[in-house]
Image (tube, rainbow, N blue to C red; front, side, top):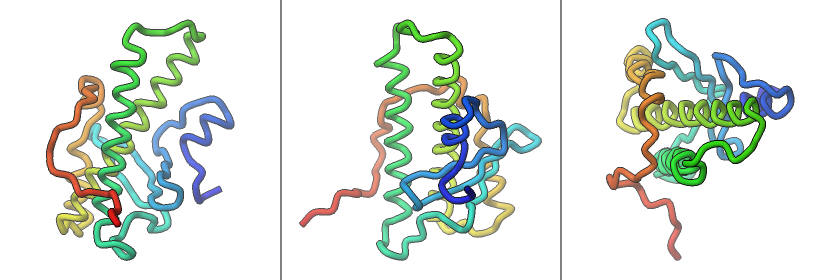
Length: 162
């Protein structure tokens, strides 16, 4: 169960959100990591089994993964801001709260992963420097930032044109 089994599967199989450290995997076997909270309230990310986009098959693998993660973050934020802006449509309160806790955990994991991949793409290889960058992302940022709008910054085009 070490490959492609993590926080989402624990919620599915046992009905609770895994506490930290949490294991996440996205895009089948493209990236898998463990996310933990540091003593100062930031995050640390460690790739599991060295599974992350490496720019080997395609030059922009890593940047395409960042684009995918950012799109998923915006999609999840839009669900809360638009689709459920009026609140609970009648679900049991425990299930409603668990769904939003899982959504928030997903956003946290994807945000730290995207930031880590961007740092790797920009040449950060020193583990201490990487941990410092990861720990600048804190839990408080996720409490107040639920904007689902695109920042309109440049992103690599992940569509393959013929």
